[in-house]
Amino acid sequence: MSVRSRSPRAPSDAVRHPVFSRVYAKVSTATEGDVGPYRAELLAGLSGRVIEIGAGNGLNFAHYPPEVSEVVAIEPERLLRGLALTAARRSRTPVDVVPGVAEALPVKSEAFDAAVLCLVLCSVRDTGRALREVHRVLRPDGVLRFFEHGVAPGRGMAAVQRGLDRTVWPFLFGGCHVARDPVASLTDRGFTVEAERAVTIPAKGPRLPTSYLVLGSARRPREAPGPGAGG
Image 1 (cartoon, helix red, strand yellow):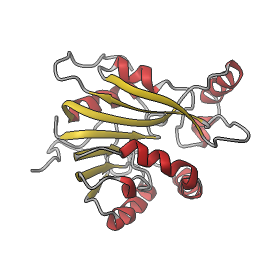
Image 2 (cartoon, rainbow, N blue to C red):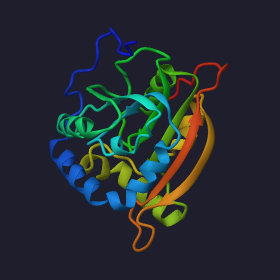
Image 3 (cartoon, rainbow, N blue to C red):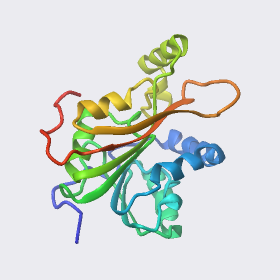
């Protein structure tokens, strides 16, 4: 059964960060020793058809369990999408890498058993619209797994994060915002958050604005009104 939409999709180069994408590809690979175990935890227990939004260079693909029958991986950035295609060819799980943006997913409604958001909500242009799209493409009672940047617990670092978000950070790092609240955003858009825990990377040593993350699971309720219209 096809899960692709016949409606017009976003241009394949709707998002372009040629310098940042190269830096991200190198840094993400270099830090996989710290991040890899969380990727495995993020994806553990998934099954059926899965949509991964903002797949980057495809580092999650190696961690999908055998119960997953298919992954549709959405990635708007050309260089990262090329790297994801290479990773998909090595994956034990069938992975279809597709151009598109989170705010206009090129797939049919209620076509997936699960959705994955991994280090992507920080950089989408419209969080509310992106999560409404995730809500649309998940079947009722579908699972959403998330691993995202979050606000630091300390007031000092949180203030630094907010200051960076208002100034240079998005410009330098591909639109990334480190002070967004993914759990609140999910709740506001109609998801039921079932589990969450704070993660700090690296676990030891100096803390950076990007060190604070949240790992968790949510669900699209079986019977619920559509998610809110806020951005």
